[in-house]
Image 1 (tube, rainbow, N blue to C red):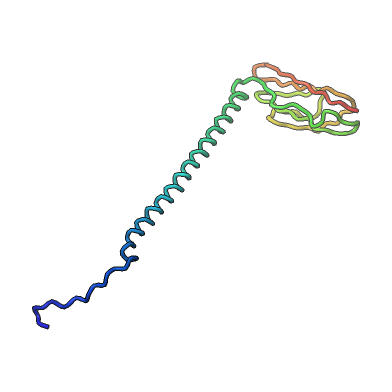
Image 2 (cartoon, rainbow, N blue to C red; image 1 turned 180 degrees about the horizontal axis):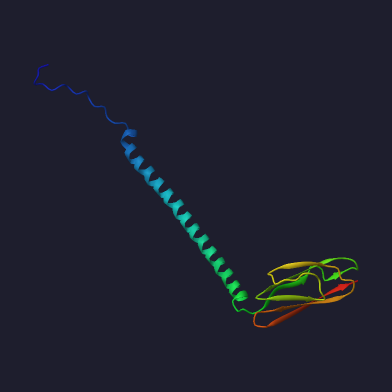
Length: 153
């Protein structure tokens, strides 16, 4: 071999079928992975938006409810009732009431401590059929009254 002669290159082997299609399958796998990733991401985003919309709707309903109850400044009973409407002599039941926008609350006949609150329950033991009347007074001198009868058998 002389200095001017180029070294002989080894003969090239032809590429196998796997070597010829490998670059194309790699691209196909990358495209499929991107598609799957995009599908999961878009589903996640639509689910997140749906949850946010449901939460916003719930918050708006809560605000509307609070506005209806508290917004007018009018005395309103949120609840007034008894656990049992009919009791036997010596038996107790719970009398519960709730009032908003009231300065004072009174129940006749007296059943214990009453206070203006959204929900308060008292244990009562009527000895005869009794009608309980709740009266709530507001800031402007307005009053509201409701009644309930507990039967004793």
